Length: 220
Image (cartoon, rainbow, N blue to C red; front, top):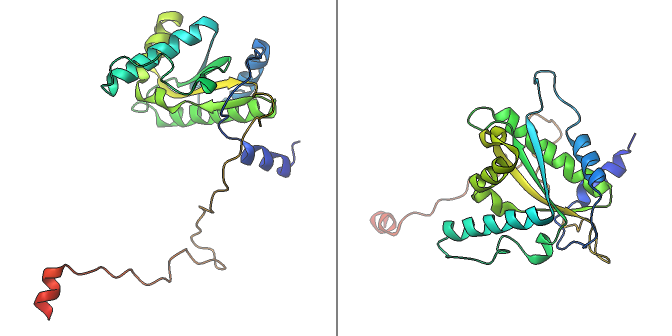
């Protein structure tokens, strides 16, 4: 069993890689990671509420180009370069992993949340295997483009779902960290009902609200 220290080091060390090596990632390794990421299905589900789609080789470039074109229309920029989706260093990753919820949020928030958890599992497992990842958030601005792209190639099943995230996946560039850590986050945990730790700010006086100038003049 993995120790708490090892698990903590893995979680706190994960970050978006700024660049990737051109070294190809074995397809068998990607399959193994994604099977493990979605390897536990709650009994209340008849089938996994998440879907993984891996896009590689020339199809990766086609997806990037379509997303960039759609973003150009969205932002009224006109045609933008095929690699306007993210930096070249990120888009050079050998694989793009699409994570979907099997249904949209309007039909099942739990399915969407579990798909997000599966995406996080995949990210952690990838870093444990010595790979690097980078979340490409811009794809979520034009999710219909991703659904159309996948539906054209794999059939209509995924068109009814919802895009959760797009991950660039590959080996880190030589000499760079697989998971560059960002700056330490401040403590964002608050307690309610803990006797030895009152709620943050509970004893602080309410901030004074400045009076408008007209009110001040009327009270003088």
